[in-house]
Length: 72
Image (cartoon, rainbow, N blue to C red):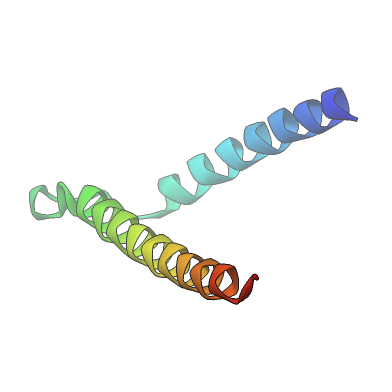
């Protein structure tokens, strides 16, 4: 199963690379003002994901602490 999953992942990645190349060729070329916009977008997404993970970790820690206090 593990090998099959790896082969499927490789196949899908190869297919997506081909699709991305086709989409990029249809878009207009980026001008000098667009440089870095993808990097900024990735940074914003990374910060958002880190914030969401932080909220989830805080909620789990709070729940565990509450349940540990109830153990006697």
